[in-house]
Amino acid sequence: MTTSQIIKDLQQTLPDSRFVLRGAEGYEDLNKAYQSALNVEYSPSCIFLPQSKEEISAFLKHVGPRALSGEAPIAVYGAGCQPLPGCANVQDGITVNLSRLKGVAIEEGHVSIAAGERWGTVYEELGKKGLGVAGGRSAKSGIGGLALEGGLSFHSSRDGFVCDNVINYEVVLASGEIVNANAETNADLWRALRGGGNNFGIVTRFDFPTFQQGPMYGGSVYYFAPSFPQQIQHLVDELQKPDPSRDTHLMISTGYAAMFGPQMMCQSQVYHNHPEENPDVLRPFTSVSPQLDQLNSMRVLSLTEAAKEQAGDSPLIQRSAYFNTTLKADAGILQEAAETYTAGLEPIKPCEGLICSLTLQLHARSLLEASAAKGGNSLGLSPDDGPLVSVLLLTYWSNKSDDAAVLGTMESILESIKSRAAARGQLIPYTYMNYAFASQDPIGSYGAEKKAELQRVSRRYDPQGLFEKGVPGGFKLFT
Ligand SMILES: Cc1cc2nc3c(=O)[nH]c(=O)nc-3n(C[C@H](O)[C@H](O)[C@H](O)COP(=O)(O)OP(=O)(O)OC[C@H]3O[C@@H](n4cnc5c(N)ncnc54)[C@H](O)[C@@H]3O)c2cc1C
View 1 (cartoon, rainbow, N blue to C red):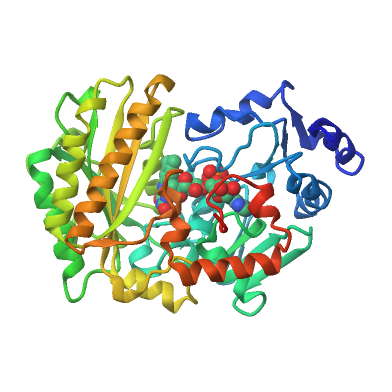
View 2: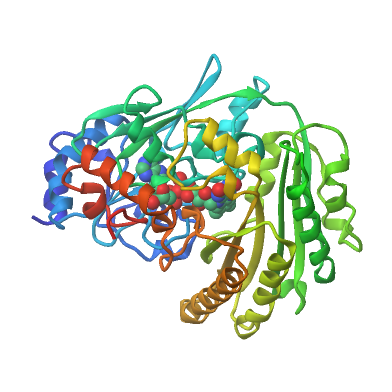
């Protein structure tokens, strides 16, 4: 059966307005709404725009068997912010675009967020009531990618990964059944969804606890490469203190963009969850000298404003790719990683539109303790592993003809960083799914035990393997 026949059948039960066929008005705009142009190159036969969980249930009941047989593969799209090619789009299949599932319902002590929302709206709604949530840092970013794959928030040092904070997932399973997964009901599914990606169902709502959230202090400072080793040292010093702050969020980057000239430029993005101006704990980062004063954005700001500023940092629709690894919090190995990165970039600097950075983000021991305290996740990390530093290689470029050079260079830089760290016993076998490229294996990196548990949960809730075989995008459990 062709995809168009499958859609015709579906239109017997669901309104026509839910389907945008390839070539129809509006298709191009919907299929352009990805953060990376690598995803725009997929051209689904149809984009399905459900408006309720019941419509998703009807869709899966009808299309599931055809997806399993390979006639109509499915992709699930939250907000299209993950650059991994094909993770939320599919060639000649049906992309389930969740952007019409809207609603931010604030109840006593928690917020229920529909899968088509973005963090910016969530923060705006909560901000009106003086509340916050441990969600994504970018206003533009979608909910699903973060809440199903890990997720780093402004509050991670206190509250763990974004996924650790999900107290209930409302999920449409492969059978079309709609279930809740939380600590009491379907707890194995709840834990598996915390980091297991799109392998268990289509999540339609995410419930998070809320907390009081007043203004915070934070922003970015920009400076030159000779100061980067010192910033690495400050980062590690903070992490290795006997009592590191749980109220900070620290990210430091070194990067290249032709508009800044041939040298590397550096950025520290630092936040403290209190309105005090330039608190002592941030001073080693804010006082870096010399810096580009005109770009300094440090100020007292709301969570909504902080997320808006983060969204502004990503260039619009370019080719982009992420790669990542995790290292121990050791200044020597992080400095070596920065040097490997800087030297490795040389051959691709002439590529048009190249903007790239190596970003170091903290996994404080308190973050890993919060994961454990909140019921555990799929990621295979333990507080004994910490403190850790996530190393993200983020790259934007303009032309398809440069894909092989850019991606090949990033792969070889990453391998070199990892092998040097492994040789010094500083490599942690954990790859963050959100920041992983196709050549990486985040689920394998969770460890054999976690992977086997995820496979067991998949067999229980999706015995025929619809989300393994019929939803080919993203990182799969049995490969
Ligand atoms: C500007 C920007 C800022 C970012 N900021 C952060 C940050 O602060 N912290 C951080 O950790 N990462 C950040 N990232 C990375 C980000 O976490 C990922 O891009 C994230 O996956 C985006 O979520 P999304 O819902 O838009 O994902 P999509 O790209 O739509 O989907 C990603 C994956 O999740 C699956 N998926 C999405 N929703 C659902 C659902 N409801 N049910 C089942 N499967 C689903 C998709 O099938 C796909 O495999 C950022 C990225 C960008 C571009």
